[in-house]
Amino acid sequence: IQWEKHVRSSAQIHRSGGMSVLVTGAAGFVGTHVSLALKKRGDGVVGLDNFNNYYDPSLKKARKALLNNHGVFVIEGDINDAKLLAKLFDAVAFTHVMHLAAQAGVRYAMQNPHSYVHSNIAGLVTLLEACKSANPQPSIVWASSSSVYGLNENVPFSEADRTDQPASLYAATKKAGEEIAHTYNHIYGLSITGLRFFTVYGPWGRPDMAYFSFTRNILQGKPITVYRGKNHVDLARDFTYIDDIVKGCLGSLDTSAGPAPYRIFNLGNTSPVTVPKLVNILERHLKVKAKKNVIEMPGNGDVPFTHANISSAQKEFGYRPTTDLQTGLKKFVRWYLSYYGYNRGKRVN
Ligand code: NAD
Image (cartoon, rainbow, N blue to C red):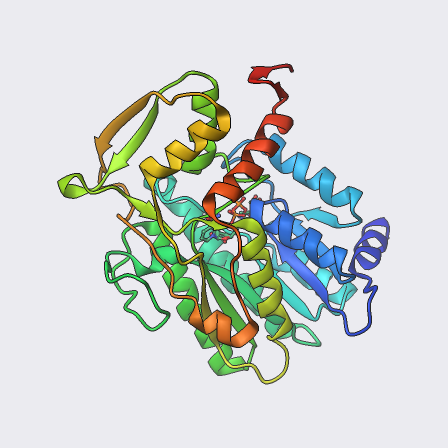
């Protein structure tokens, strides 16, 4: 009873024409920001997250507390739990599902292959089954990944480019997810939009990602390992600031209702930056020089560069990223120093 009360009140819509959204992976990096943005504009939001320990669980708890403070209730549970999902869809007539729960990270897949199958394939099917049976059927927007372009080096990547050469199990499960999503659209008419995010970064980010772990090591005086591509070519990423990704998520949710066919969009920044340049920017913001260990990229799932063509998302819902890496990292560093209790370069707690 208590549970239902919290869920219903969190799902309450506070604007006309608003939506009630189930956000999976709500205690994750992107999920936290998307949930807050939806809540802020008056939409109803209920979060679901299994709080797994892929990275620092205390960061997820802190994000949950932030969400609670803003009126977003986050249920602790797994997307593979069909009973829980049925209970949720019984309690609330969700108009939309923002599906962000996944096992992320390319390198971890070498140690934990089955967690990718569990969350990114089995979990996706369980969630889509629940959406199929729900009345009304919600529109679904979910996170795929730029990693589906795999070994394709023909940049910039457009949605129609080949995605049949994944370089990691992570990428393979995201690609499989796209095909599974397509069948649910084709057979059951579910409205499904896949978003291929390109290296998202920002405050409340993921400790397993390079910009985050570089920051931690630089501040602690520890060396960082910088990968270099073959023939001494620098790796580059189309780093995309979290606020731009949030705008893309909301834009696709807003255009996903009605007789929406299966859709897929790149959400990137369209201006790749090399990893050494990323390190330079961090050094400037942190006012500390990095100790660099430059090694040739081991074959562990990474690709040499990414670069998004975003014209489809631009045309469909006006997606236009506005934050460059320099500006975005400044905001990330400010958050990092305050969250981890640094004051003028010295840790205070
Ligand atoms: P994240 O790991 O911070 O968030 C994912 C959340 O999902 C976590 O809080 C985790 O606890 C939860 N989760 C995992 N498996 C679950 C399960 N079976 N049931 C319930 N909850 C589960 O990652 P993120 O960076 O916020 O990524 C969000 C989505 O975007 C993911 O699907 C990810 O694959 C995708 N993506 C992210 C990036 C990026 O650069 N951050 C790039 C491309 C794609």
